[in-house]
Every structure is written in C-alpha cells, then in structure tokens.
Length: 292
Image (cartoon, rainbow, N blue to C red):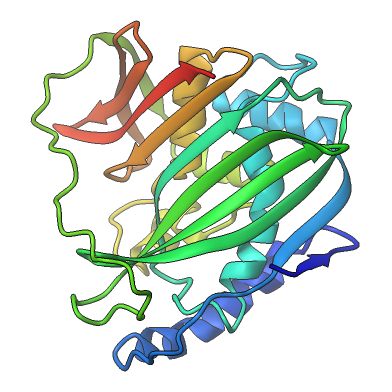
C-alpha cells in the first residue's frame, strides 16, 4: 500500500464539510453497487508528532484520567490519529457516507507506555470493508511508532446502515449473526456517574471531534436523536480511567447504545478484566482489558 506523508495534521472542519457534502452521493451509490467499489488505497503518515500538553490535560480531565502523568492515557493516540482517519473516510474514493456512520467497536493494543514528551509517527489506513447484517462496516487501522518501534495500534469499525443486499462488493461473507445479547447478567456495580449536558462539548474541545450529534440537543435532533449523545470514545475512555490498564495491554470495546446527555449511567466491572456501562435498562458498551 503506497504511503502519503503529510506535513501537518489535517484540519477537521474542512474534512467534516467535505464529508457532509459527499454523503448524499455516497448514500445514493449504495443503492447501485458496482463490482469495482474499492477503498482509499493510501496509507497516510504523519511524522514528528509531539503532544500538546495543555490539550492532553483537558482530555485527561474530561475523561477522568490523572492529570499530569508522564504517560499518555491508553485511548489518547486515537485522538492523535482521528484527523488522518477522517481524511481517509471523507475521501471521494471511500465508498461509505460520513453522515450516519456509526463507530461500532475499537480494539487497542498498547505494546508499551508512551511518554507525553515523546515524538511519534502516526499512520492510518482503511483495512477492509465487510458486509454486515445492517449494511457495510469499514475497518480503520491506526499505528503509532517511536523510531522504528510499533508502540500502539488500534482497529476501529464504522458501520454504514443500508438495506441488506446493497453492500459494496468485497468478496467477504455478510455478518448475519445478531450482536451478543444484552441478556447476560449485569456486572457488579462499581460506580454511578451523572453526566452533564456539556460533556460532549468538553470532549469535543479536547479531542477535536466536533460532530454535531455530540454538541447540542438542537443539532442532535437534526440527525434523529432526542438529545445530544456522548462520544463513544469518551465512554470508553471514562470506563478505562476507572478500570485501569496494565502497561502493556489489549483493550476491546463494543459500542451498543448511545448515552444521552444529560443523563445517568452505571459502571460495572468484574475484577477479571470485563467492564460495561449501562443505564435505563440498556447496555451502552461492553469491554475487556487484558495484559499482552
């Protein structure tokens, strides 16, 4: 896969505008799939990345991590790589519409701790498209290197919903099995959190992800939500801040139902690496942490 090296981090606002503009055309194209539907065939690379310590501190505060630790929170490299992922997912060659794209899961491997004062190289590419029982799912791979060493990586899946039988042709079988049932016994309750209406805006300011569904009730209603919803990666980070992670760790989180803001949620964990966030009779996310 050819690499394209960037001189600086892409600005998110123009990318969001481009994604919104192209979304109606991409959505229409899902109804007339072509056998040559493909993916952006480029890996974006951003070298020489240094951490903005003020922005990092804001992220730590809103997510509940200790502020001022030398090491980066395990979820923070996702924030660093997000503009590159957005550049790929708003590219005209990316076949799924940005509007309505749902972050369904993330798997993170931290091979060793990352210092907040380090200098890193980011690379992001779209790994595959997979037919899904509700549409088509894209997998985005993010990697962080220090020198030649791979120190952190993640795989995020994003779902574009459309009718079965309209997936872009990928040669992979459709995922027909329903998601793991929420009928499992709830994990032991560890904490209850009351979430303010401003959580989405605070996380957006720290992460740069200013998707309108997270900011205000009015803008969220334009996309079918009664109120603003919390960022999925905020819910994952908040749980991991409470749970803790080994220095070398694998984290897997499945996002199941949106968290409405303001609201109240319950954090549960079993002491063996599993955790969940629930509220109002729904499971918002389930995850696990293990040592690697």
